Amino acid sequence: MGELDGVWDVKRLGGLLPPLVAVRKEISGTSGTTRLGPLPGAPFDVVGLTLRYRGPFRGFVDELESSGEVVQGRATFRGREFGKFVMRRVQRGG
Image (cartoon, rainbow, N blue to C red; front, top):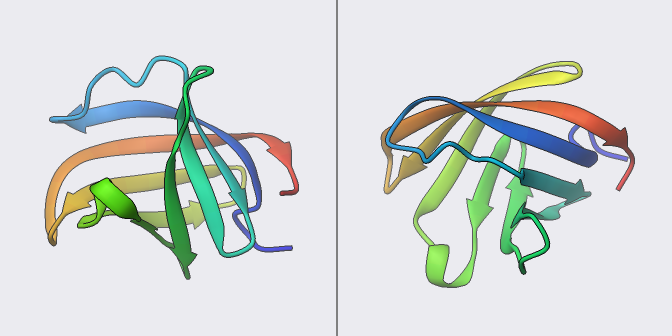
C-alpha cells in the first residue's frame, strides 16, 4: 500500500482553482481519480508525490508535500503553478 492510498477531501487554498466543493481524490497504488461528487473522474498516474493526469487533462500535474493525514498540493499546467490546495484523508487504503 502506498503512502497516498485512500480517499482524500480536497480544499482550495488559493490561485485560479475553483472552490473545489465536493472534490475528492481516490488513490490506489500507481493510479487514481479526481472526482466531483458522483460525476466520472479525471484519471491520473501516481509517480512519487506527483499526480500526472491522463487523456484530455494531459499536462496537468499536482505536486504534493506529504505530512501524514494532511497533504499540501500545487496544481500545475505544463510546469506553471496556477493554484494551491490541501488534501485531508477521509479513508485509508485503495
